[in-house]
Amino acid sequence: MGKPLEEYLEYWRHIFRRRRALRWQEEGWLYNGYCRLCRYCCGPQDSDEPFPMRLLPEQMVPGYEKNFFLLDASTAFLDARGCRAVSGKGCRLPRALRPVSCGLFPFVLNAGGLYVYKTCPAVLLNPFQRIFSLGGQAARWLTRLDRERLEGIALNLPTAVLAEKYISLNLRIYGSWGVSIRTE
Ligand code: SF4
Ligand code: SF4
Image 1: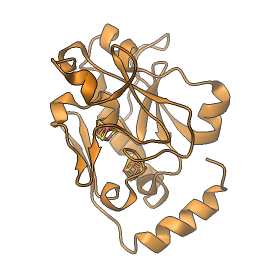
Image 2 (image 1 turned 90 degrees about the vertical axis):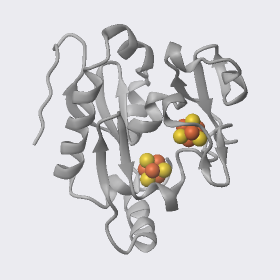
Image 3 (image 1 turned 135 degrees about the horizontal axis):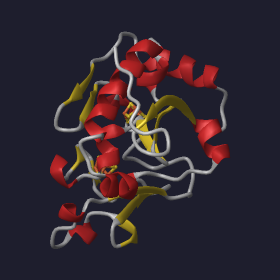
Image 4 (image 1 turned 180 degrees about the horizontal axis):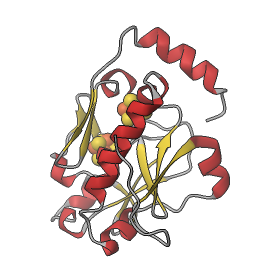
């Protein structure tokens, strides 16, 4: 991340003069009106550290390996090259074949808890209550997946990275606290 949050805030305020739509969609996708101008998530990352995106077994269709850079058979990743599936017009894959994490971001499931990426313009330019409420909807949707799938798609980021880049929403999807979801 590097820069202070204030610098991101200033930058995004300059790009986005008005609020954009944010809506949780029941098929498990956040409609995010900021993405079109931001494009951070699919494009080149500011680090060569791979950002893993686990695939569900049904997404590993014949030829799927040509769509992604892969860490292993079921783990796609992004790095300084961006995602292999991105085209000039955005993602070239149908939603059903995109990693679950693509539809969740800026929400991230990490070790059973839900977090939000701090520097996403949608997060910085909206009241946190709104972001928390959307996180609650995402969390409710995630609880439809069984534990094995949830554990499969969850990240396990180092504590220092979580503290630097993410905010915990205190929403536990699975784990020792059990399901604990607060919504509006
Ligand atoms: S950082 Fe946020 S607004 Fe930008 S592409 Fe990712 S989810 Fe969309
Ligand atoms: S699969 Fe599609 S939506 Fe997901 S990171 Fe790659 S280009 Fe973006």
